[in-house]
Length: 170
Image 1 (cartoon, rainbow, N blue to C red):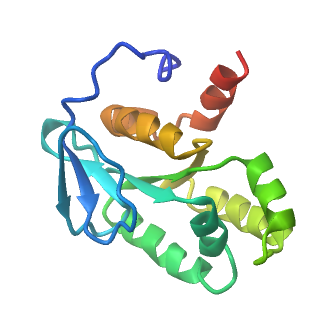
Image 2: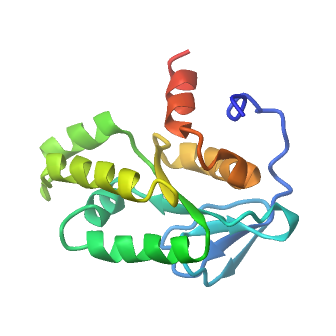
């Protein structure tokens, strides 16, 4: 499944994407429906459904989710996903460098080593349930979300970030 990101020509537009009704700034897709999801912000319906979900995060959401006040709530979401044999790709609309730079100038500084630590712990403790993916920006997440949902279960154990970084640096 190394060609995950190479498959630019495949048509992802026919995918029916379900968007959680609580999603604050929903992305727009050609075919979508809004409904209440048990976890995550996006999934697909019909024959493409494979227990795969996307949790979309802005840079701010990412930092706040992994900070001390919210990490337990997020763990509960991951526990729920595990109970349902599901998998969540946490797609963040930023990258590590941007997060580091942004934090320097942010009025709401967070302790980044603590954030990175929590990300590593979750990636380890919930490797059967989730992985973090940095999509650079909103446009990046708009592009990658349908692909992730289309490939679904086939890429649960693929290190997507490796392929994204490789493609960016080509």
